[in-house]
Length: 252
Image (cartoon, rainbow, N blue to C red; front, side, top):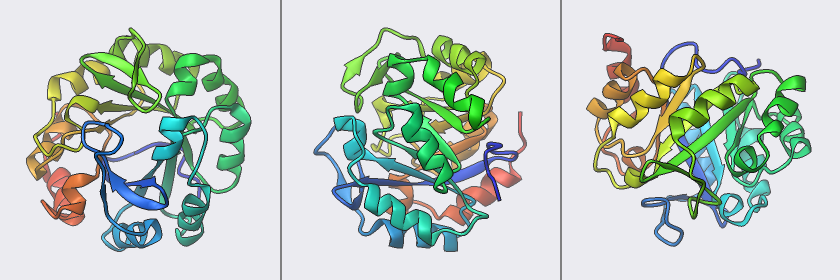
């Protein structure tokens, strides 16, 4: 079953970030700060058993180095997951051909960051053959979109960039606040609201989630989903607890 229509209802989405073949969660997007959490297939299976409707997969080596380096580990996850679980993948996807190959191989949505910034027309090019399948990743540090594994500034304002990519055919925006990523210190709701207000397509929020209250706040900020990594791996709350709290919350 295709899951290209992103997030018809609010979802808490577990992150399965892969570096050197293992699940890793970075702090503040800094390479070398990661804590390892084991095998990607085991992690994916655990989150699916806990009720995940979508998994967020990232090839961290690909994000930093510009080419996919954990293809085998990602492929193993894809082969494990049933069709009713959505899969979105980012990190090292630099061409339309790469994206189409992944979409045809079982990935539901591809996440483009550096490629979309450096070559904006790639979004429309992929959307032409795979509508709704492109998630543009806007990673912000100090209020500026950054690329190449969060190491290079672009001068782009996240909200303005989101509006442009929505017009170009993006199916969703992934907004990551790198300033708070992996630190379990809470979210920046205002930054998320600015991006949400700029577009009509779904916005997926990521970065800083430490409590179930943060999840609820992001839903109330208008996010269509939230990606959670460190808080889940560290047991701050369970996936079921977070999803239940979001389901019970009154949407604004």
